Structures are given as structure tokens and as C-alpha cells.
Length: 245
Image 1 (cartoon, helix red, strand yellow):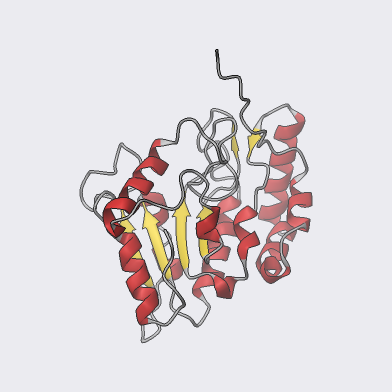
Image 2: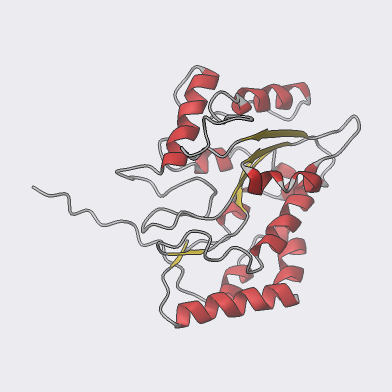
């Protein structure tokens, strides 16, 4: 018998401004000025026009990463590139997928592999990384929408203006925070989050977890031990219990 289970419908089906209307109050100081700016209006017009033209755009919950607590509650930030571009995958959290996937994206497989090797225990997550988000891990892509089968199709359209501002907002909090920058795209944001002094953030860099780069120099993702290093930093700065990766 064939498996006929349909992929979750994770398509965006509403105007972008409606998405911004539901952003939690704690983040509105960043998102409201953006959507009212020239860059924000241009982005909304582009996304809405592509929807009108019949483009399939993911994910449905574009700003889901902001739903798990205020900026001050974010203890770790993991920066991705853009959402997965396959049906039923992207859910609004960087690197995470909707539950029940029959086949995981290769980058996510490598992330879970590194968690196991680094911490000595299998990850508590098998596909959906929302349990990480619930512990104060901001899973933020640089671009927050993508078209079906077309990676990076919404890159350079304005999302980066918003996500840079969100990163800067988290970096401005007084509490030391961990920033994981995987791949060249994420590492270009280092200047946004670095902070010298006794309350310095921990900025961890490695190659992207994609199989194309995960084992390559200069800093292979496999073996980077970012997860245990993050927990050690949180403990030394009294930022709550360890993340249950």
C-alpha cells in the first residue's frame, strides 16, 4: 500500500501587512517602523504581487520566530539564510520543519548529528525545532519568505533590512547572548552583534551545515561543538538553565 499522507499546507495565503499586524507587542518597536518604511512597503508590494500572480510562497507563519518571547528572553540566536523551498517543510523557524517529515533536509540532519556528537545525547527534536525556540533560542532566517522550488527567490527584496534590525535589537539587550553564525551569509552579520567589554556576547562561527560545506575548512560545521559551548557560556553568565538541545 502506498503512503498517501499529504504534506502540511504551509503556504502563505494573506497579504504581508496582515502578518505584521499579529506580531507580539514586544517586537513591534522593530517591525512597525520596518513595514511602514520604504523598504517594508516595497517588500509587501512584491510579496503580495507574487501571490496575486499565483506564486506558491512559504511559509504560512512568516514571523513565527518572534512568537516565543520578547527580545530580552532570547538567550541564543541561530541565523539561517532563507526558508526551505519544498512543500510542507518551512514553518517560520530557521532550519526547522513541520513535524512528521518522512525525509529531513540535509542541513537539519547535520545539525541534529552535531548535537548528538557534541552533547553525547540524541537531540530531543527530530524535525520541528520549536522546543528550542521555547527555551529562548531565536531561529531567524535572513530572508523570511521563498517561492516553491526557488531557493533565495526573495533574497535581496528587503527582508534583510528587517532581520538585521531584529538581530541588532537582541544584541542591544544588556544580558550576554550567544550568536551562532553558520556560513558566509550569516557571518556577514557579525558586526551587528559583536559587543566588547565584560558583557560581551559569544559569537560562534562555522561553515553552513549543508553537506556541501559542513565538513570543509576553514571551520567545519561538523565538530564545531557550538551547542555545548553555548550552554557553558549561558551557565557562566547566569542566563538560566542549559538549553535542552
